Image 1 (cartoon, one colour):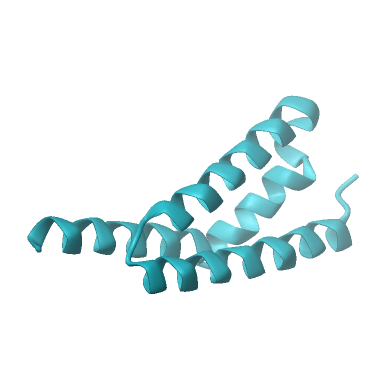
Image 2 (tube, rainbow, N blue to C red; image 1 turned 30 degrees about the horizontal axis):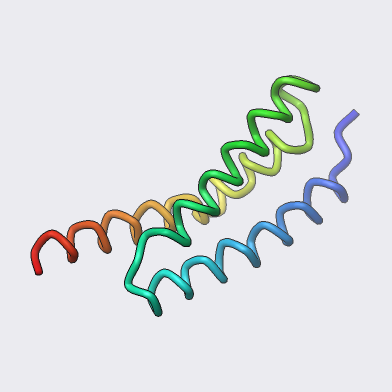
Length: 88
């Protein structure tokens, strides 16, 4: 059974971490904070899929992050920083 409260709590926690990583990446002018949070999200989703499949809290939390545009923000900034560092 899908536990909406659990999923939203995990989402809110990860959203704070995503926002913090974006802020740190901009301040440091580095992709490292973004890579760390992306690795954490990937690992969380993978473990959820392995233990409970498609409807795991972790996978559904990932889908919420994706649908709300949080993952896109991470990738957009990562590519922007990468591009800026190449052009300097």
